[in-house]
Amino acid sequence: MTPLALSRKPDSLYYQVEDRRDCRTTCHHRALACLRHLRYVGTWARRMVCPDQDLGISAVSNRTGKYELRKLPWNSAEAQESRGLCLMIHGLNSSPKQWESYTRQFRKEFPNAHLVVGSVHKAGNCSLQDAANPFVELVENYMEKCPGKPIVFIGTSNGARVAADVESRVNPEGLKSLTSFSVAGVLGGSKVVDWAHKFCRCLSRLHHPAIKRDLSSMSQESQALVSALQQRQVVWKRQGAEVSHYFIATTEDEKVRPLDSSLPYLEGTPKENYWIEVGESHETIVDAVQEKIFQIMRPILR
Image (tube, rainbow, N blue to C red; front, side, top):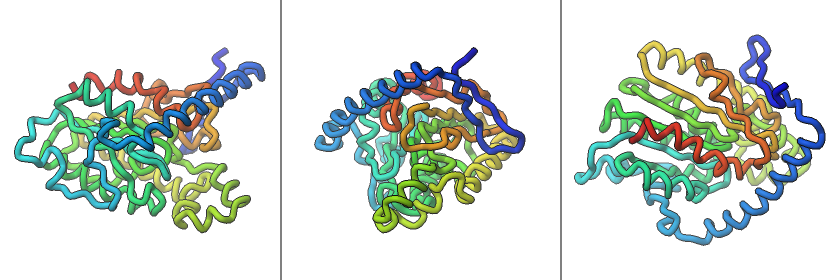
């Protein structure tokens, strides 16, 4: 019997994970996640003290919530023909430096593709619309300048929400190919957010009101986001666009609960595109699935 399996109730917006691991295996995976997370803390500290250029991260990222379109790489006079665009979006209160390992590998493997390591407005501590608006404009500008070229989104945690909102609102005309990776996405909210705001009142003062509202477990706003994403798939299908989604979660995720929140049901997305990892924390899963993501991107962007 497979220790982890996906099931879905009729009319549910999400897949449920059936965890059949025995107690010993579960404890082993939890211990492994803790050890990996401790090691990750050192990596994160190193990334935070290093300048962006030393980490191989593009200066395209912008913390003001607005991109100067003329400065985007595909708009320069020296721009070569683009093989595609990859947009990486970090999580809440995180930083573009989260993508250090990805950016180094991307520039080695896809020298003719464009990469934008997004810096989310106010590190995501804002409304979803304010976080996503700059990326909607950016993607639409790319589609105008490079029509028909493939686009890849990679979002983690709250960044997966932002990517989903971008997809659901971007002008669909001209899009031919989109591949989206949601890594530990908090698409359905999280009970951890509910508990944190209940027992730590100061978070309510530190967080934008939209964060508490939108990230509450299975909130109306999160349901609306997934519904909009589902409706957008109808548009893609009608216009013949090649669209693929990959939803990635970890059983040891300490921030996204229930795990279903990371696994929205999208018609046409096969079950094999839902990856359930074990022994990884909310943060370490990003680097853990890097090679699997690049395997999928290679035939798209080369």
